[in-house]
Length: 115
Image (cartoon, rainbow, N blue to C red):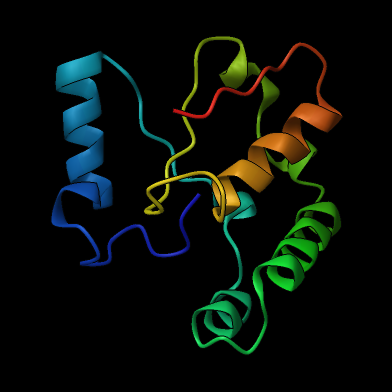
């Protein structure tokens, strides 16, 4: 879901490390899903306080709609428990919540639990 899955934001959360930890600890697969990531421009506008959360959320949902994220991501991957990851500590101001809600609105049988 992250735009930059190899950034230094949190060293253990880089693509290759996540792939390793998920496989070793949880016997889970890692997938990077760019259709669910915000654009760099949208992310920068929010980070630099050029737009507030409500505007970010509106634009991000519009982006998911324009990308047809519900068809760009394989629904079958959610037939088993799946986790959407990003770097925000809570779901309140996080694009993973918006993406999960968007997918749940477009797919039957998906329930969202924020951990």
